[in-house]
View 1 (cartoon, rainbow, N blue to C red):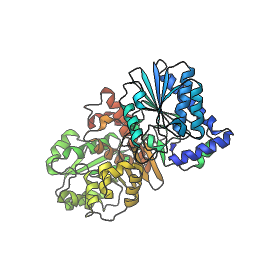
View 2: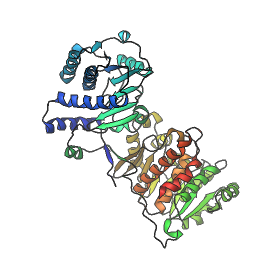
View 3: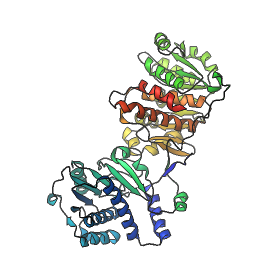
View 4: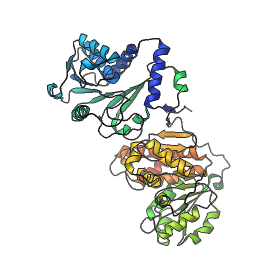
Length: 493
C-alpha cells in the first residue's frame, strides 16, 4: 500500500525551496531555471504544435519563471510575447535576471494589455502572474490580466498555481482557469480542495530535486489519499455468516422523504453489511419492501417506538430524509443516546446545529458528514466562510463535536484527532439528489465490517466517488444516485 501524498502550506513550500537550494548548493536563479525547464517540457509535450505563446508575467518569482519559459520558447523558434504586469524596471533579484535572460533571447516584452494582440485558438497562454504567496484581494491591473486570460479561446498553462487561487485554502474569487498546472517543490493544498480542482486542469508535480528528508521534516496541512493508499476491507473467511459483518439501523424518511432513507439502506447492503434494519414513517414500508426486500423495515411514529429497535444494531445511520419535525427530533434524540457508533447526515446535522437536541454532545464514536451548507450551520457561520477555507471549517466542526467529520466537496476532507485527509474521487455529475444518502450508508456498512471510523470514512469517500466516476462514463448529466449501486458492489471488494 502506498503512503498518502503530503499537501503543504505555501510557507512550508517556501521553506522547502530554501532547503532545496542549500542542499543542491546552487544559486536560486538556477532553481528557477530548473523549474521553468520542467514547466516548458510539459507545456511542449502537450502543445508541441501550438502556433504562438503569450506569457503573462507578474513581478515576483512566478513572473521570473514566466520570463525563463518565454526564453525557452524563443530558443525553440516558437513565436512568443510577454505581457509584463509589473514594469520590468521594478523587478528585483531572480525575476530581474530572468527578464534579462528573456530579452537576450529576443523575446518581445509589452507593458500594456492594449498592445497585446488578441489571442486566437492557436495561441497558448502561459499564466505566471501570481504565485503561492497570493492572498487577499487582487490589484485591479492583475484582475484585468486574469480576465483577459479567461477570455482567451486557446489553452491556458499555469505556472505553479493558477493566478488568483489561494495556495493554502483553495479559495478564489477571480482566478485563471487553466488546462494544465505544473507545480514545484511541494504539493500545495489549494490545488486539490475548494476551487482548486475546478481551476487547475491537469496537475503535474515536479520536485526539482527537493531532498526527501526536508519534505518529511515539514508538517503537511493535509494527507492526500488515493485508491492505492486507502486501507481496504480484508477478505471474508470461508465460514462467514451474516452477523460477522454488522447490523446497520438506518433512521429517517419523514413525510415526502422516503427515498433518501431507502437509498442509504441500499448502499449499506451493496457495501456488504450483514443485516440492514430501517426505521421510517409507516407510509414508506410498502415501497421499502418492494424496492429492497432484504431490508427489515419497521414503522415508527415516535421516539418511543424507536427505542426497542436500538438494542440490536452495531451501527446507526441517522439523518437521510429525517426532516425537521417533532418526529425527526424525537428519533435523533433517541438514536443519539445509543451506545453504538453513529453516522449523522442531512437533517440530523441541521437539527444538531439548532442546539435543542444533543446539545453540547461530543462523541468519539460518530461520523458527521456535512456538505458546505450544513457545516456552516453547525459552526453558526456563513457558507462563504466555509468556502474560504474548507480545511479550517472541517477542523472546526471536528473540534466542536469530536469524532470524525467528512466535509463533502470536489476535494472531500476527512478531519479527525490525528489530522486532516483529502480524497479527490468523484465528478460534477454527482451534483444530484441522493448522493449524500448513499455515502451515509457506505460509511455505516464499513464501520459495521470492523473498520475503525477514520479508515471507514476514507474508504467510503473513495468508494462513493469512484463509483460515481465509473457510472459517469455513460454521461455526467442525468447521473442518478442509484446508478452508483452496482459499482459500489463491484468496487468494495
